Structures are given as structure tokens and as C-alpha cells.
Image (tube, rainbow, N blue to C red; front, side, top):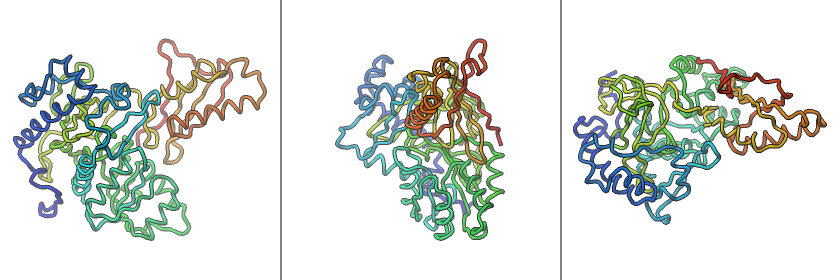
Length: 440
């Protein structure tokens, strides 16, 4: 591909020298350290680490002196412990669920929102998006950043955005046909579901659509699954990485060459560390991704442990961008499940089971594929007394568990009631999760 045709939003920054990128990072890190000291959380953490101010950060390597931040820390700081500006300056709140139902809250000022939108616009431009695109956003809107943050970035790029949100496949297809949608944002599993719906439709054919590209997120997926989607829909599929804690889906993005995700290093410091020693690994080696956001006023976040496993891809990218690239993620260091794009922790399900009378001590969480979508089933033993009770009582228990879990994890699970002693008992650590999804 001719370099003249490579799209940029800010070529000077995107193709800056390593020295310039690191100078930007150092200045921004010092600023964020000073800003973080305004929060209750970091003022205490930094004091224990011997950090009194930005003067203690003399080089980028001094980031190793700063303490890590975890999702648990965000829950403990809830609701205002990490807020670095007056509440009157906050214009939006985003949140994601934690393992106990306590949300992890992200605050943004108008300046923060503008920068997040610009980062997203840069990402979409790198993937070949432009103001000529008609983009249909099939991610959930609301507290989840994947909907709104993507939407604002696409608008800033100048594209026409159709905020259809998630679900209602027939409506999605109608809008795609009627408005000539050229790009969609959806989970990989939903893209396969869309393909199945097109194949089954008597009124719509693939050639009726102008669809050219899809941006996938929220679910880890293999290169083989990407190729399967591309072959099925006849489009280009672009991988991206983001998380609510870092302003949403624009943290790292594939360019038109799709050879790794460029992490925008003028706005984030990315470290890849050995998850056991928490020491840096060599470029090309897999470790845990740790991120520091460099440009957020409302809520600084220093050395955040993402729990995601990835590696830096050595060498330059053909697009000319100098920001380092992340490889496709290979797993996580915790037990989080991603089900149809939603983060679910087994401990959330266990929380519901443990507080419900009549539920026994053994259960199994089963995740499998039903067509293109994930299905969550919770198999749960009940006590002998409950098992001997009227069927109406057992059905009421099933309905109660289903409603409680859906309210907590936002996923609609199937509940299978089992008689006492019917589930296998493991020696040693109990096996609570059976993920039957196969890598495609």
C-alpha cells in the first residue's frame, strides 16, 4: 500500500521519534503524579512509597517507584477517593461492575471527554475510517464506555453515526440496508450472529449492504475467528483494545496494516511485566499489561494492572507510526470471564448463591456457544429439604436466582437445579467454571 494513502489524524505525533514520545511521557507523568497527590487514595499510597511530588520522577524509569493500582483499589476508593477535581467539574461518570457488585467508577471533566473523543477519532482514522463513513454502533450505551466513547470519537472524525446500541438484530439489518452503513462496531460473536441472520433472511442479501469494515472489541478472539468473520461477511475486521478505566475503547488500535494494535503512547504509558515478579519483560515476551493514563484531570490512574496478557511487537510498522504495538491478548491473570462482551466474575455468581436459602454448597458455571453467541448456565445443587419440597417452591427458587444474577451481572443466565450430590466433587480446589467455548 502506498504510504501516501495511509491515513493520519495527527501525523506529527503519530510518527514522532522515540525521543520525542518519551519526552512527552515524562512531562505528562510528572504532571499526573502532582495531580494524583490531590486524591485521598494516592496521597496515602505515594507517602508509603516515598513519593512527595513530581520532582521524584526524574526519568521514565522512575515509574517503577510508583505503586500499582488494581480494580480492588478502585472499589475500595468508591465513590470519591480517586476524584482529583471538585465534583462541580465532573460532566460524566462511567462505571463497570466489580467482583462484589460495587462499581468501579470513572470520572471525566469536559476536557477529559474531549481528549477521549480525540483519541478515539485518531484510532478510527488509523483503521481507515473517515468523515465519509456511516458508522453503526452496536455496543451497549450507558455506563459502559464502549458505546458512548466510541460514538463521540466517530462523530469527532466527522462520520455519520447510527446509535442502534446492542441487540434487536432485525432492526440492525434494516438500518444497515436503509442507511448504507459502511462500518460497524460490535463484538465478534455478534458479528457472526449478524451473518447468520443475513443468511436466514428472506428479505435481505449480503449484496444489499454497503458494509466494508467492522471494529471488534469487548471480547478476546483469535486470528482464526477474525478470518472467519471476514470471509463470512466479506469485510475487513479491525481489532482494538480499551477499558473503562482508561476512557474506553481507543487505548490501542490496529492501523490499516492490521499487524498489532498501536498503543497511543503520548496518552498512555504501557508496561508489560512478569505477573509473578512484576519486573519488565523483554520486547516480544508475554507479560501482564500495566497502564498509566497521562491525560485525565478528573481521575488519575497510575500503573493500573489490567490483568491482560500480551506482548510488545518488536520492530517498526509499515504505516510509519512509531507508537509501539500490542499483540493480540492471550489470556488473563485472574478468573474473569467475558460473555458476549460483558465482564463476569465467578465470585459474583457465588455471592448470589451463598446468600440464598435452600441452595447447597456445590455449583458449576458452564459457558458454551449457542450458535454465534455465548450462553451462561449455572448448575446448582439444592439442599435435601428444598429438593423434597413442592415443585412450585423449587421453580420459585430458580426464578429468584435467575433474577438476582441478571441484576448483578447484566447477563440472563440459565439456571439448572440439581439434586444434592449430583455434581462432581473435586479433590483439592473445587472446579467452579467449565468454559466449553472452543477457540475458532
